[in-house]
Structure formats: C-alpha cells, structure tokens
Length: 114
Length: 113
Image (cartoon, rainbow over all chains, first blue to last red; front, top):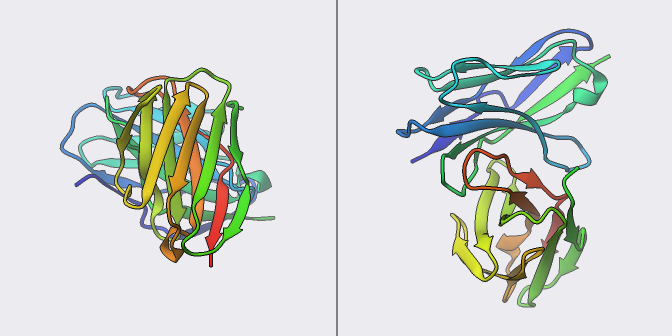
C-alpha cells in the first residue's frame, strides 16, 4: 500500500528562523512525484513545491526547499526565514507517474511565534 | 490562481437528502478530481474524471456518484446523505496524468445532521 507519513502533528518556530517538516513515504514504484501543499486557515490548498523522483537535485522555491532522500523514502520541507504568513497546515503528498490519485499525509500544523 | 470555483461553499442538510456539489473550472484541464478532507486522514480521493463522460472511482467512492457533461463542470452527488459524509470536499484539476500538480478549489464544508 502506498502511504505517506508525517510524524510531526504540530511544529512551532520563531519568526525569521528555519524549520524543517518531515515526511516519509512507502512505495515500490520508481517513477513518482512528491509535493508539499500548504493549507492556511482560509482552507485553500496551495502548492508549495514539487519534486520529481528521477531528479537528484533538490527542488527550491524561494524560501522553501526540500531534502529528498530517495533511498530512505524521505522528503522533508525546509522553510527559511519563517514569516507569520507561513503559519498553516502543511501536507506532504505523493503521486505515481500516470496515476490519478494523490496520496496525502495527515498534515503538520506549523505555528510561527512573533 | 487556478480558475476553480466550488459551489456551494457551505451547506447544512439532513440525513437521507440528496446533495450535489459543483466544481467549475476555466482552465480547460482534462483531469478533474473530488477529494474529501477529514481530521487525521489528510485528503482522500473520491472520484476523478479524465474527460467528458469519462469517470472512475477513487479510494472512498461508496455513497458518491459523479458526472461530467462538459469539460468545465464536474458534479459530485450524494444520493442519500449520511452523517459519515460530513466533511470538507475539495475539487482539483490537472493538465495531465503525469507529474503535473493538482490545483485545488477552495473547498465546500458539508454538514449532515
């Protein structure tokens, strides 16, 4: 079964500091994609970053970067220079190439302390 | 922002009544999806569509049906709502079935009393 595990239900960080959110997944597939989505209190699901499994280089989007360890099946999200607007639920998700389903983790609630 | 509109945004109804949720997109994307979000489960796929009149089941499809008569509209129907279907429902769209990300609507909060 394909599963995604986010082992940290809640995290907090001081404004301007760096925080890392963990995600592990279980799959026997070799071609897949990994995503981090952000869900603020407004309930929107916003794509933060995307990683192709065949790429060794870690994806980066401004203050957001990932540490993708394919052998360990780990996909953590690093947020640098945390801002108050980063406070949200963060979901890790996985999708096999050609498959329709996004498999989501249970989410990590991130709080930013001013 | 992807042009996805879900309606209604909120609905309260009674057990046993039929409910239809609508998803409308302006992106002309081929793929459309319905997910439900419940505490402790993240989002789970209910049904998806890969073209007009082409739909298939997801992992939690029991009690739900869908229809897609036009590219831009994807309807989710609860034929006889039950309290276990109280949830937040998200529509998503995607250009392709490969690695393109799915973009989500703002969700519909459905309460069944």
